[in-house]
Length: 180
Image 1 (cartoon, rainbow, N blue to C red):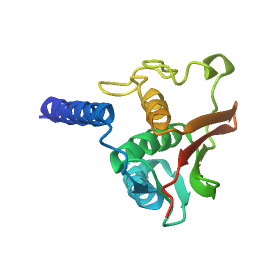
Image 2: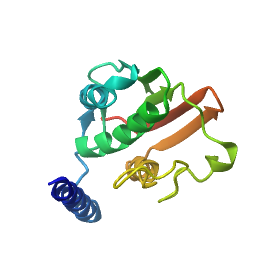
Image 3: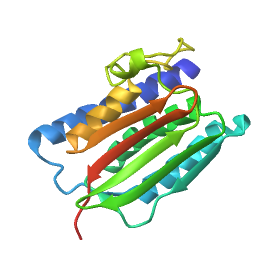
């Protein structure tokens, strides 16, 4: 049953990404939009349940009504990967914030974890690169940050990272907003 569930989940992900690639190739996504607060709230609730036993506080300060040019699934994939990594590595607090900047929104995900080793820094967005030991099927594949980077680039944004060993990591994503 567990294997069947994993295969079904992978099939859904593959189907989604294939449909997404087809839509992007045909130019069928110009009107896509998603409220950052709505996506963030759902992800925070999910991650609070997943990491409930760790005593981790996940804080969100994301104003409602800020809409980016992206589909909800893309924002969930990008932000979900960043938040899940922060929850995995964070010791006690993970924080997600956003703020409007001219023509864009800046979304920041902070953790108070161990930080990223300097020698790993330039590889973290490479497909299949991981700095973690393998923990089981479907985990530590080295795809999360690569997927995040690809989604951000595809939507005309940028992603930046700052990290201090022993103190934590900050990922900053800037995405174009949908003008009202």
